[in-house]
Length: 376
Image (cartoon, rainbow, N blue to C red; front, side, top):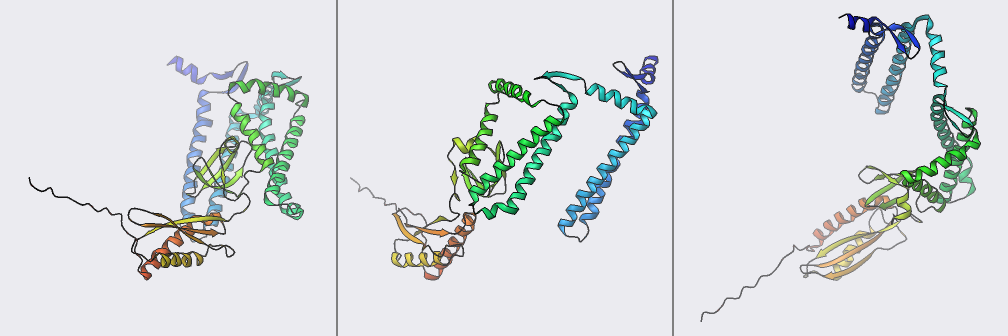
């Protein structure tokens, strides 16, 4: 018991620094109150969400209310944590903060004549996010103001906007590094370290980065394109430095490494034009009037709401199969994103038209002839 009492009541020491509280004070004055506050805030957040969901407000208003409530509760939690920490440290809190800052500011290593401390490494994180936000903001402003007035096509606008975004991002990041005291000449040392790292697993990362720049410059795909890559079919939402975000027709989000767009075969359905040809296959009975079938299929395709008016549909007899005469209907549609709705509409109308015209869609069938063997 004496050992436990000594451990609990002895002031805590961190190295040579003696803190103004013991383990019992830490639990009673900080950990337990903070834990209780955390639980209460979680309960309040869930209760607020239930109350908001039970109202007749619009879904957008409900979502915003829940988001801002969550943010407000987080702020309250942070303020209370700081208050309890201040109460725990007492009047000497400022002195301990100075000691803590001095410890974090101790140099860990030198990089090209620049002393790198924990604070330096921590400051790089907000600088990177600030550079990323600045690049995105400048790209958005450029897109909304003068980019469309230049008269470039979508692909060229995409390339220029991406180059502008990454250029601004790089410049902002370098300026931020110089502000926190990193000598820019030491960047060459960093690149040397990265060069050594290439042999230890960074090849794919660097390959994806350069592939991202190749995509921006050569424009094999761009944001908004409908593509098929590695059996994933969907639209490109965003092309990032290392990867590309695709939303499939099933509303699945797929993250594809940029190198696959350079090394693999990519079907870009909207490279130059968003219109494509869809094919609907159908089989009819051998007893059908084939000329009438072709005429009915052509009329159905011509009435499609997705069809390009300047392109006439085509109907072809593909083959004489075992149980049916197989035909193909080729229809130009205006937008590749309507591919499946257009195929559905044509198939449904073919079924209805065949019902009206008495055209038979045969079942697969086989005729079996049994020869009886005459007795000897």
